[in-house]
Image 1 (tube, rainbow, N blue to C red):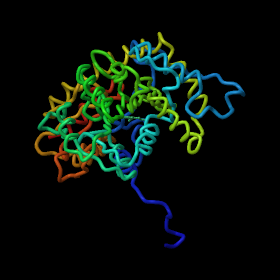
Image 2 (image 1 turned 135 degrees about the horizontal axis):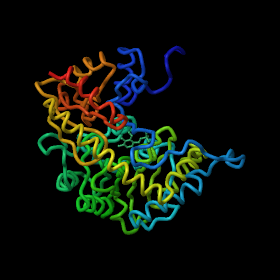
Image 3 (image 1 turned 30 degrees about the vertical axis):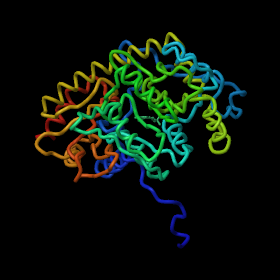
Image 4 (image 1 turned 120 degrees about the vertical axis):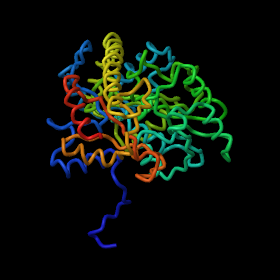
Length: 400
Ligand SMILES: Cc1ncc(COP(=O)(O)O)c(C=O)c1O
């Protein structure tokens, strides 16, 4: 090795960034900049929604807030998160069951990084892109639960039980986004309860990632509503201000877990993070004020429910076969006439637009030879409703 070579372990950026970088190469501008059509990206509108609560333009802090924050979060935010889950889901948690991170991903990363190496992981075949990266980066063996066209991307508890019964271990750990990114499939209350029962029985555990909690019709849901005593579990519920509270730039996420596990996050923070910016935490605490957050939950569901329906009709009229569920802000579907997502993106780049190729949600990463080659994730999260016609026009030109 020479000094001009990196001494660091080499790994590529998370898949979504692959699209962003190739878009930059081709279009000469960043996806998301004015004039681009960011259908590949997973961010919500960051302005006030029609019928939605105001988004504050200010945060107040004083010199005391310039001190180091406490390792797992400042008290006003921990209390606001605790009150939120207790109010809407009768969770029975305390602020000692909450750890704050700089966004949703760092919390998920920490939970998987510190999961004992011998515990087998179960994860669905079609899932949130960075799960793949972090499982590989952290060298974690995992068993894949079928989630493909054969089961309409709707695996159930039977699939999990089957997979668990074949493991050479008396326990397992589930990683699952619900509603699922990219499919939008949201488990029914009964199924979610069965999942929670499974994750909290015997020596099992699980991480339910609820980044899209608000984006579900008829109403938001959380796994916490099915938990009797979080302290006697190894369940981790990931939440974030990123999507439902519409503030991805604040970089606030959290984990709800047993006190014994929050302590590990605290220890980690003291070694590797040093807490999260106080102004961001103060800002998000005000977004969680009871009446405001009640308003946000219903406005998000309603607004994005309408967008989901509108785009459902539009995409289906172009011959895309949709498998989308009732949650999230994505459509998930198969392109017509053997068109691959890669080819579609080459065409879309000419119009400053891009979708996320389904291959980046394939937890086997079989690329264009695999079954995800013709699948796309179309994000309507960042789209102003006024752009619907122009978006459909571009898609119409690129899908034959
Ligand atoms: C399933 C899922 N989990 C977690 C996150 C958290 O995102 P962030 O780290 O940007 O808060 C996202 C964002 O895209 C997501 O889609």
